[in-house]
Length: 581
Image (cartoon, one colour):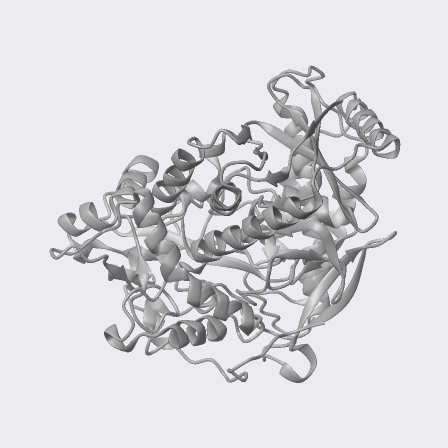
């Protein structure tokens, strides 16, 4: 195994990972040696798919807006289980990050006077989402990638899939990864590492996320003994396009789109009489499910075996769609042959964002428990649970979280690397690398009787069926039994491709194992939390229970299954109240 030494290693190349790399490079005046490891080409990271925009109070006082109001909206949207000190970090730093990306060249939509336009998003009291049409993530990631290419001290390792996180003496030592282009194994050794690998919503079949959103970094941390926080909270976006699940951005409703049932009624008036289609995502998603269950959904064989409702954009007109939602129009025409200026779109809730992830403190430092940090290891973006989103993320807060904690962790990683210097590669560490290389070689030679793609298909079906927007003990129990069986079967898989060069069969098998492990954690945490809060809705426990459950769930890998523990929620200004939209 080739051993490479760096000052800072960043696993993941989305907005959080690239923002961390840029910050560390700038802080070191271009001197710190930084490795960015991506299992894709870096510009194919899932951040490129973010459509609607990034939140921030650019114009305090306009429409009565303030950072406190942004914080309150976020805390309320999170159903009060977010850490409010982390929320205050987000709302105070978001405006400067939007301005930074303006300087990096992101073409924000502007009015006739050159002012950045802000659009409305669900759960936000006033418009505070900056956007670049409906391609915001693409433009932000492109600006970061172009900026990173200017630094000679940053080396991007495209198409390297991480296989293990090596921790010793309570701290980070190395990442092992396979270069997919050659099949060679590499160890990236450093004193400082930032995991920024995104979420795991691809554990579900009907999802807005890319096939790459498999929670790799989260699973590697879990297997290394680091707890995962709040994994029961999986967000369902109300408007996944039927039948593919492709995201129809919340901006479509922010620009004035309506949700209609089979009768043509704007049914959100029953569920959120004030906010209507712009209630928080958990509220809107459950409203759609409730309409379908009440017999007010639609079904059309040309869209497959799905019940759905309609998203009506026809009244917005062709000109507005071309200006504000050009990609949505293009997607609808290309995928289902429907021009949204002329016909309504079939939509239903789709797994979208995972509020849970690697347990971190307010600075993004990974934690062993509620007191001890993992020396030299941080998590930023969707893979790290800081926790700023609590039980339900507000739309457009995700991009803010990614770049803010990318900056914070990039700074922290550089400061540590400057203090500690290079890491020695000990004999013991080399033996760890050798064992990992042997494990990977054995996996490449898998010749059992189980097709891993069958396991993935069955996992998708089980998660869609049993761990959706509404849950109950029976469903979760069935899901637990199914995922446990699939995990057991994984040990008997076979790989048709035994080669080393661009072995996507091997890569997919690694991802499937990661998703099965994380699915089991989601189910155990969902069974354990006996209340309804945000995205976690238990039918037999329909109310939020602050007396018993105003706490974060911590899930540890145990010899058998999952061990559950808890961490307190940081409350600074806003006491829990009943949510109304």
